Length: 158
Image (cartoon, rainbow, N blue to C red):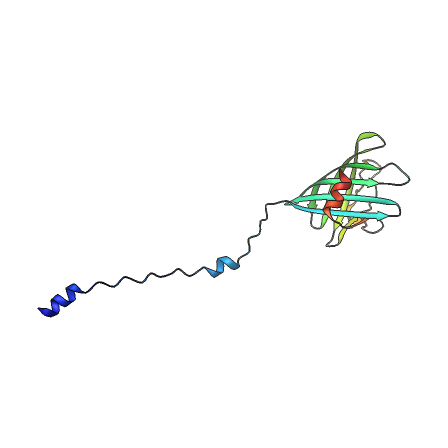
C-alpha cells in the first residue's frame, strides 16, 4: 500500500510541447503573377529624329503609346493597340500629326530581348494594307528601338 500512496502523490509530468518545424518548401517557392500586364519601354534615334514607345502586354493583348519627334517633318503622337503573335507585335497606331487627329497606320515590330525592329512590308495597292504579305516582311531597314528607361519614355510621351 505504501507504493500505491507514493505513486498518488507524484505530480504528473507536463507533456513536452512540440514546436512546429517551418515548411521549407513553401519558403523557397517563387510565386509568379502571370495575370499582371508587363510593361516595356523603347527609344530609337535616327539622325535627329527620335521615337519613343511604351507598351503593356496583357497576355498577348498589346496597348501603349508612341511618339515620333522629327527634326525636318511634323512630329506625331498617339495610341498603339493590337496583339502579339509569337515575337511579332501587330499593331494599329492611331495618332495626331500636322494638327490633324484620326490618322491610322499599321505597324509591325519584331520584339527581341534588346528592343524592337520595325517591319517593312509591301503595301497592297487595292486595300492599302501595309503588310499584305506577312511572309515578305523584312525586319531590317526600318526603325530600331532599344530598351529604354520608362521614366524617360513616359516623360516624352506626355
